[in-house]
Amino acid sequence: QVQLVESGGGLVQPGESLRLSCAASRNIFTINAMGWYRQTPGKERELVASITRGGSTNYADSVKGRFTISRDNAKNTVYLQMNTLKPEDTAAYYCNAQAGLYNTNYWGQGTQVTVSS
Image 1 (cartoon, helix red, strand yellow):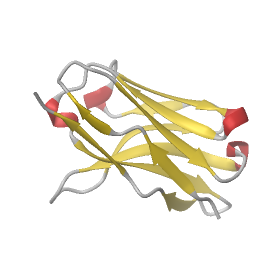
Image 2 (cartoon, rainbow, N blue to C red):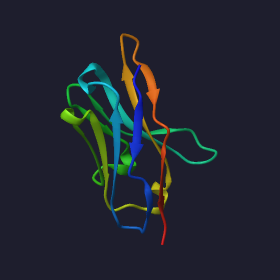
Image 3 (cartoon, one colour):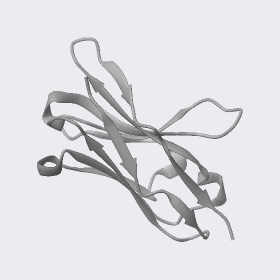
């Protein structure tokens, strides 16, 4: 089991930055991969960025060059640094962990990011 707690969402203006945090309930070295997804009403949840236990990262094309995923192993926390935010980044952002032999998915409760002037 993995419990995930997100924080850091909010309302910002276009061009500004936010950093999301996701604290895991266990050592993230025991987790195969962690990532951030986002979802808007009426649309499917989509991958924003992910990081494997080995440190490999993957980003959606729409956020490459603007978002950075990182982790602090000592704090069992994964971050999503979001720069140059755009209105189309507005969504509920969810932290995800894939753990165990079968890559079982675990989800946080979500945090809202709103980009608006």
